[in-house]
Every structure is written in structure tokens, then in C-alpha cells.
Length: 109
Image (cartoon, rainbow, N blue to C red; front, top):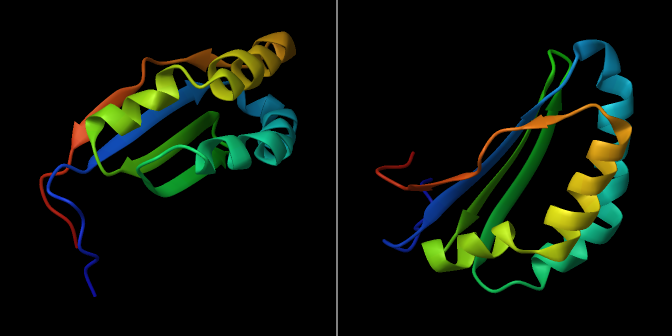
């Protein structure tokens, strides 16, 4: 069954890469960060879905679906994400971040 999304919905993608030998450290930190990120993100208007995944091949991705681009852009300034979480990853010395991108949804299954 296909979920009905607002015609203004966007997918927000944030990616990072790391040395695969550091997978356990990166995965553990990403899991720990859920303690403070989940409540902060859930408090934002417009969130429809959120996924965080860490690959043993050396990449991490946050993919979220928002009702509008304006709401998706909240992630670019959310203190818990841009200061706290990214700061912890920088202190670990493990991640290189790619620019975040908002994608208007063309079609779904």
C-alpha cells in the first residue's frame, strides 16, 4: 500500500563517511545520540519519517521525510544535530560530512 504524502513533501538527506575500521565506534556513537536527538527531532513540526543507518562499509546516513522544504530545513539549524551530534563525531575524529540535500519527491511506491 502506498502512503499518501503531501504534494509538498521532501526527503532530507545527510551523509557522512568514515574509515570502515571505525565502524563499531561510529555505530555506538550514532546509537547513543538517539537519546537526545529523537526528542529534539520529534518536537519539530512537519516530520513524517526518520531513518538513521550506519554501514560497515564506511558511511552513515540520516534520511528524513518532511511535509515541506521549510520544515526539512529545520535540521540545518537544530542545535542538537549541528552542534552536539556533529561535535561528538568531530571529536571522535571519524567522520567527513557531505552537504545536506533536500529532494522534492517525484514519485513513491
